[in-house]
Image 1 (cartoon, rainbow, N blue to C red):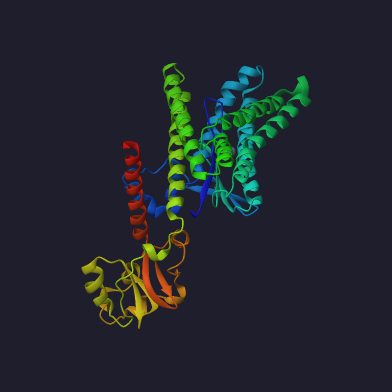
Image 2: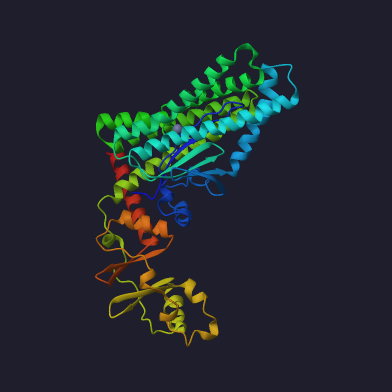
Length: 434
Ligand SMILES: [Zn+2]
């Protein structure tokens, strides 16, 4: 139901070691950026890391309708990998080559690693598409790749397929590079060195991803199997998320331990990955919870049934003094004889010079009905939330036969979710106490 959910396969980088993981549904993505800030203030909720890092990326290509983007943080990974290989691994494994050659090997290997992660990500996305799920974009960032998939799969076999194909593609890639390394034989030199590294790293990517801690690919496979066996998506998610948080916690512990053994960078990286996985697992759990809450809820149950409205003839000065300032309302439906004719917000008012407020009627500045997105009272709330996010608006007029029957705002939705969240917590406590 959420406007988008994530399949992310972040890279895991300990020294020269890289591996991806997965993150999917992102609760604060429910309404896009603006609600994120609001959500951050919720009791008992956190804005996970997964949600934050995808702004500031550059689109480099579009493949089968999927926008491929690179976040600036990827540049850091690219350079770090190239550098570590050029001055560390390659001179150690293949002594006697020139510095220039080592750097060339480093950059080629780092670039092909980028391609490998992209292929891993495309494998998830193509299978998702084949199973009827829309895929909006793939972004490569500091922890690897994120596939932005329209929603969760509706059945366990699809989830299993979409999750498993990532590690499988990495194993296939690893085998191809291994074949190249074998084919080149002893005289392969620099090219063979790069091929061997890529064979190793791709297999490592697959192995790391198969750790059964949600939201790693392996954790998703694990969830799909429980889902299949129990028939309950929620139960499966709860078990898989718990397993994922245990795994994430172990990463953090291992990272701290490694820091004390002297491998500072590797240790810190492991801690960061653990933290990332932990927040991603929690985000998935909350998303699943919200989907459950939103099931069967209509716009009518959440909307403001008696919104303040104005008539198109009202001067802007009156609108400002009588409504906006007095009642602290930012957006008002404009209504004539009960029929919606438009919407006026602070933005439109700001466009009118103060000295013209008296003579300008609301009707002259409002957004007219034809340009407004509206919903019906019996529409699913989930659909309305999607529209709020997609149109990036703060409220939707609720209309039945051209008559305004209510106003659904982001704050209505937030309050609804907040009450459910608090009720849910109370229930949880009661169950624990019993
Ligand atoms: Zn993956």
